[in-house]
Amino acid sequence: MHRSFVSQLPIPLSSAIASLSRCSNTHRALLLALSLSVLAGCAVAPLPELKPPVPGEWRNAPAGGVAAAPADLRGWWQALGDPELDALIARALKDNLDVAQATERLMMARGLNRHARDGYLPNLHAKTNDVINPDTSASYFVVGFDAQWELPLFGAWQSAQRVAQGQLNGAQAALHGAQVSLVAEVSRRWIELRSAQRQAQAFTAIRDAQREKLRLLQVRQQLQLAPSIEIAKAQAELARAEAALAEPTQTINASVQQLAVLVGQSEPDPQWLQPGPQPQLGQWQLASAPADLLRTRPEIASAEAEVLRAAGQLGLSRADMYPHIGIGTSLQWSVNTASNHRARTGEGIYSIGPIIDIPLFDWGQRVANAHAKDHELRAAVFAYRQAVLQGVAEAETALGNLEQLRLRELASQQVTQATEQGMVAMRKRNELGLASTLDMQDNLIEGQRTELELVNVRAARSLAYVALYKALGGAPLPQKTDAN
Image (cartoon, rainbow, N blue to C red; front, side):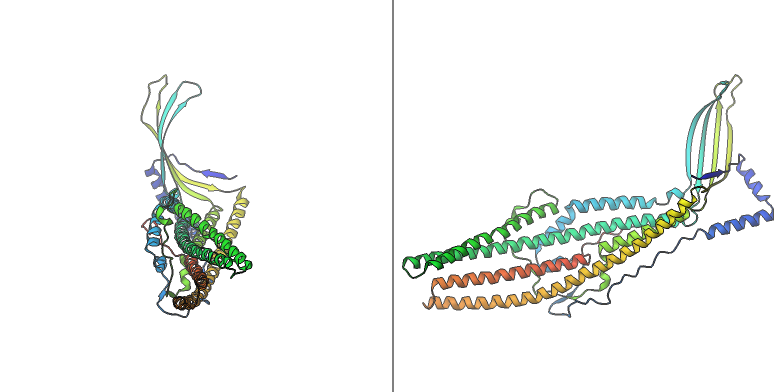
């Protein structure tokens, strides 16, 4: 609990000014000393210095290569070369419900930020009251105005702004985080969809080739040219090929349904189910990715906003340890509505004076609260550093994966080219009667399996690319306005 000392002087304002002018030099000196001491206590504590422990350069960054390009955080998905994906991302950014929620919360934070320090501005209240005298000889109707102004001393003004700005920055980081997650998720689902459709085509071709191989072997068995064990193996391979079709089919169904959710609708678009080209990076290779890009990462921006908010809370708790000083004034008129004598109107009472609220018995609790807020600020700083370290780790991992998968894709392309050359040679041998149709089926199955490996590698590389830009916080950044 605390005790308030309120001094209200029922004197006109001109009389108050005259009384102040008649103060002695000693009183003026004391008043000046008090004012200087108050102003000295108004300074707000400096913000903790945030030095993100980012590396000078990425350990897993590529050394450069063909068609190398710098990191582009705003339109990175366009490197996948898929216009349908570009249009889908634009549509999702416009219609996604998570982004819509984050946008509304940002607008709410902006509105509150504009009035963050209104509590320290003068306020005026108008009121009426019906006062009845206990002896019932008189009843007064009172109309008046009360004005109060609490001075934002001891850093309260700056601290309140820090709290509001931290909340606004957190809302901005949340919106950016929703956009980053949305773009990455749409890209990932689209890559998985197109890759699964290409896998389904390859598995279908393998199944058809296995079915034809089984038919040819059965013909051979009828001619007593193939043993029963080869028929059993062919039947097992055919069953395995048919079972393999289930996985890409499940991926297709899950991907289109999730894409529908991401664009804010209940049903997927029918054209999504039509197979299309697989998104791929091709010859694209990252040239440079400055470590300072991590500052755009939503998790880091959110942690930085939390540091600012915690610093403001600490400043307010420290200011709460000192007296709350303000100025109050009141102007009231009263009318006697039940008097045995002739009623008189227009009687006014005016008062002005300082308002001082000094914590007494709960001062220890306020000190403890200030210490608690100090620890909360320290924890926010540690959380910020942890967010930076996590971002560095994710970016380094994604960079390493992206480069290794690029090399693996090049190797898979060489295998595919060699297999295609073998298939061309096999066709020529078949045309010359030097190879059987059964051999052609085996060669066709091998070619489809090689193509399937390339599809998987391209999908993995594209997903690693998505992971890298998600780690860097890549997405259309929230637009800044004057309200920020």
